[in-house]
Image (cartoon, rainbow, N blue to C red):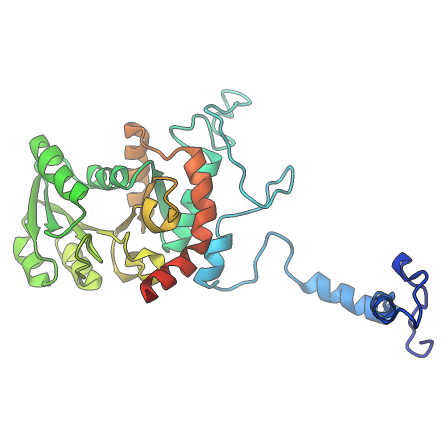
Length: 317
């Protein structure tokens, strides 16, 4: 031991340990203080390691982001989980410093909701996200952000029933026009485009028959005509497909389905590829007042951690 430079002092648990007590003796030996050179090496190793709350450079795997994206220890207490902020209003230090802390009223922004929106943007490879109380709130907000009276939308003829109904019975009477067509053949979309087409709305896999469409080709058609392409990818989730990686401008998620996945909370989201789209959707969210409540936001921050495992198992089944 002297040749190795090890101290012979033992931790308190070693008192009374003997050869007659092999397990305890082995435990004691494992807890001996390291030699000074070894301690210096270990300290140097720790100094080079990533500090708590930070990450090594480079991309992270989706499985890692599902658990850790947008989650930072709470500064005051060090709590690992993002706290649930059930506050309606937030104090302002002065008129001059209004919104300096980022929050004023929870209809616009809330710290727990912001954490969820940041996580969604990271998982979907987007610029920003807006989280809503339901999937339909997200859908109607995406349409409201991209269309006005006199505008035209080409939309899949196979979509969630609520989406179809909102276009036919809510937006059409407001002066918007919708052409429903089979998105499995992109030529149908190209033929349906008009000079006033502002939006192409696709859904893949489509609810309820799971038909698929070519996101990249449809995005090219949208770009050629100066329209936005929004994709409802609820059934895919980012575990299977991230439409923003394939040219789409916005992706819709009904968080109720797989992000939440436990039949407890409802929620929806629009994730945008750039600042322009993200700002438009957030503005509509604030005007409509349909932001998600902090409690389901907190719950979905937790349930989304296992989404990768659940989607893969459900797909295997």
